[in-house]
Image (cartoon, rainbow, N blue to C red; front, top):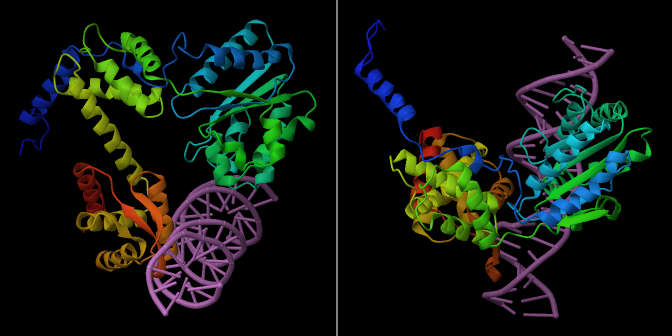
Length: 412
DNA sequence: AGTCCACAGGAAGGGCAGGCGA
DNA sequence: TCGCCTGCCCTTCCTGTGGACT
């Protein structure tokens, strides 16, 4: 063993580790500023979104004259620049308000953030905290949190703009009552004026909403169309110029990333992830340049990380159900819910875990499908009933890693 | 045309953990 | 400490459903 008990001398392993770290520091990196290749980076100018920027700016501008701006609804699929434009415009607005000494408070919340704002209580608590009032993370009745939120609003002066990102996820989960309350809150406030920016990935989202909420929330609407491959390429070009060192990208890398991302509904986030991860892979392999082959591997890696992380967050029975499906999918291309349930029960006996009901397992299968881990479609076999036909479209590498994760956890 | 299968999936509610206020 | 609250995972009960079979 390399490690010595006394701790006085440096072992071989320690010195190797040390030189590895110092090599890392001294080595030339392919990146100039990796931050510029992330979605959190705020570019100085936002490409191909002039119309949306101007639209949003003109809708929010009345806040500078202490008028409450119209509520606005922003639609567009993932990675079309909604969040980026909203943050950009609201920050400029905040800066001008500060210069002109106008009272303006802007609150931005991502409603999909787990354990933060993914329930009515958590959203209200987070909003109230951002307005400067403390609220416990649990324990209070919801109406009490509403009261505190209301008091926090009353204590503000001028206009408060509340931007709710991924609002569709929250409404689908808890309903639209909180939105109704939010859109009606101006009626009860004296001096403060509240305006809401709703941001949604789902274009048909308002279909689920109460018509009163729909009309008051969608006073103004801004649509963000997907980027095409050419636009993505220009965006990537501009970001890569800041993010990568000179001459490290081989020809065709940017085109490949933008083409792949354009296939994914014009998703700029995906394009940035691809080129950043490709750079990371090249660097890890000690390459001085990023090649197109790195982009291919980056795509595999992103998919693998997404699936593995998703499954890691699932409850234990969801993992056991997935394990059962993976085992069965090795023998048959498609399996039915009933068969999965029988096998799952056997697995539970084997690992000494009490089994769930078929209803719950059916729900877990449906959740795994929604998360994109498995594919399940409901089919009817006529006389032989209705079931879900489940298939797995994951590489062997990912399947193995998922299996090992479950085997380690349950000592299978 | 009616029956029946094997589920899907909605609704209601139980039990538990974690947390708060009195 | 007790009562109450929310969130989460789960069960129970129920209705709905597409298409093969009779």
